[in-house]
Amino acid sequence: MTIFLKDGNIRSTQLVKHAENAISNKRNVKEERRGIAKEEFMSSISIRTCTKCEGTDFVKSGTKLSMEGRWQVYQCKGCGHKQRGELLALFHSENGAENILRKTTETNGEQTDVLIHQAIKEKEIVISLPYEGTKPSEVTDNYWIYAKGKIGGKHQPITHRSGKWLIFVGIENVDEVWAKVEKAYKEGKLGPYAKVATAKPNPNATNPETKVICVYTYDWTDEEDVRRIREELRKLGITNKIPYKANEDTLGGKYIVKGHAKISKYYE
Ligand SMILES: [Zn+2]
Image (cartoon, rainbow, N blue to C red; front, side, top):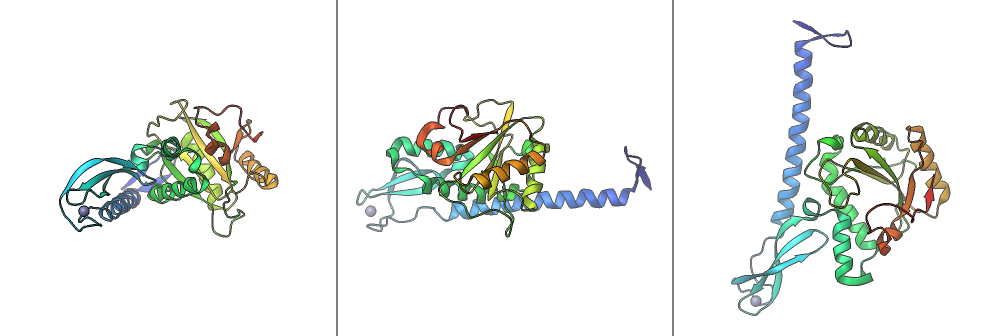
């Protein structure tokens, strides 16, 4: 049997079935990888005995925030020692990385620095890996999808002076623009990585009708590299003026106020 597609092509139902199966299998594998990653993470941190006195009697004693997320804290009834128990929420499932960073900064003052930001970023990338190739409009359980630079691509290793071009896209266009950015990453044309906001409502977002794509560069002081990446984005059809932010400014608190005005290193 054959069916007629809108574009005038003819496909056998078998071929269509085959394609449907392939898509469904890919989705199942992704779901599975996501599940395993979370399970491994959760099982590595369950509480058993007190690390000081080896007692096994505990009372719950509040929660603690770390780079990984929010933890249950337990106090040993024997010696009073407090230690972390299970992870209550992976940071990405309850808070965006920036949100965690802000809370950590509030708690520890300026001690929070680029290294913590980098660590959060790395973690966020690992958690986002199973979402690679998924349309941002279809992801509702994770705030970001990442694209990583191809090994052997043009980008340099990331430094503490990294920054990003910010592309704000109407929610109806985000899949299309992200697909172009992703393709450019596969071809090794952009920087170390990029991320796109998904359909998961983010309390830090300025406007729910707009999604942001962040295209990172390794060092904001390398103007040539910053402009090279801007030029690649232009080739993808992003021709309106867009701002560039250094992560240092983000970390310095200038970005904590919602929005993106006034602190751009570049705007072109
Ligand atoms: Zn104890």
